[in-house]
Image 1 (spheres, rainbow, N blue to C red):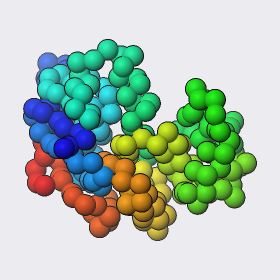
Image 2: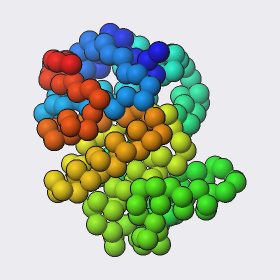
Image 3: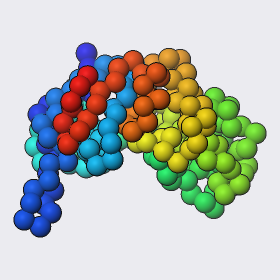
Image 4: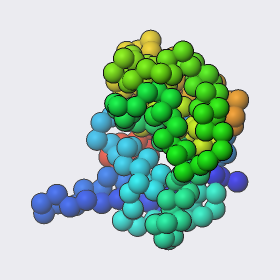
Length: 221
């Protein structure tokens, strides 16, 4: 059974007198444990599509099923719980809080939980290879190190789905490959479903499946 399914999905914006179709009639199934890479140039709609899958934006029309639940038809409170419990987000710009250490940034994602927070954060930082930098502020970390912290933050709730938006976009090619290799390793070890959007061709070798987008449509799969 697909863990994510998009059915006849559209997202339209008004730009003056024009209607822009950022996502144009996409149908897609993503299986549990799959590492899917979505390739496409800037402006093709891939980031908008990812945000729709994560419930960060609402579609103009269509359905988005997460574990069989159509998130376009549920109340915001339930949607927020699905995002918190089932989906981890990784962004190009890291989005770390500059005044918090690496470990505090990760712990912030589980602030609503009371048990074993410190130990869980420590283990997660070890998993992503950044434990030695746990007490450093983001400004003292390299780009690759900051992205590892962001990955730890995305994984700390043990979500079944990871949505990654250009996670190597601000990194050099060597560091970018290290981050993709880490994501692939975690995907294989914990069977988390990863959907990664990028314009970088070298991401293809880490994927179970690659699809291409252009002008809001899937052009190949």
